[in-house]
Length: 390
Image 1 (tube, rainbow, N blue to C red):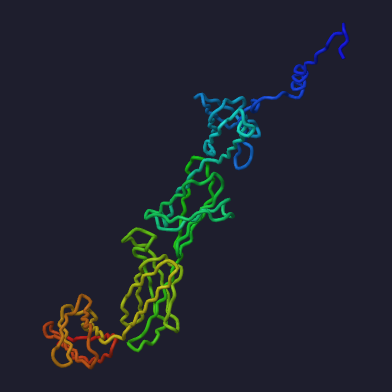
Image 2: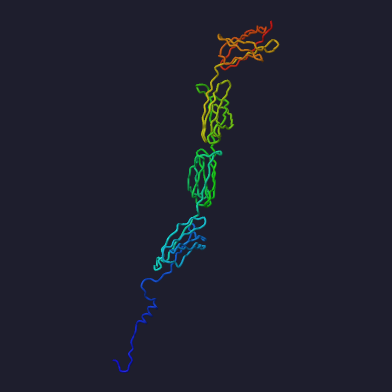
């Protein structure tokens, strides 16, 4: 009950409520303004890359650049609302493409963004040529990682001139290996540098060839031992020297009991082969062999079918009778030869048989008695006649 003279006190709660709200952070509609930033890291093959340049293009049209710290980190802060494009560059490196992030200052999730970049060394190139005795050749070329001990990371074929190339090769150490059938080829270890071309020329050598020559007697094919065989060449050896050129290589050998002789270690090419034994008639032949190949040649020799008769005519004092006609007779027709400066008359390709030799001695004032002569196949007969004065 209100007593007369007493003062009435009125309670006003709003100041206290405001004080309490202020003490606990207040109450607003919506979120408070957040710190805005784009941050991240630039790496090279996963390792932090210091000294890289990171550039940000802002919604206002301006841009800003930073150089990464030693660990590759960077950060752009206090960014305005809108799209921001971030890119990274480093000398001699190829970095991930640029990335765009949208800053929303009133969002707890869209106000700060992490953007990372990984960079790789710019590739180099390997070029070279594969040759055989200086001339370009077709071959297969393989590229191995880490000199020659790593995995095979590429294979190419040379063109018609022997040239090859490996493009977009990451910097580092590599082994280059050439291969060609029936050839021994070299290898080369190279170091590829970013944005540079490394030369890797390789040479191949033809593996030697072998030639086996068999010499037979007559159509029956009986092996002939002791026959002297000569091989000369090669002429126009494939892949070794120029066309129509000849290497002056001559080797000789003797056939064994089986009629064979082997010539190993020869340069590839075409060879001329001859055989000789006594009076046998042995035709020449040729054989062509490639690298690491064996060529076989057969020569069939035949016994001679004719004979040769030499007739020496002398005076009693032993001097030769020059220009005398000498007749070889085995029935018609007769064959006539004149003696040469040494007093000899020679009859070749004579059919085997029994002959009579007559002399035109009267023309020289000499008396020369007839001579008998018998020859067989392949025989060579030399007879002499001393003519007398009347």
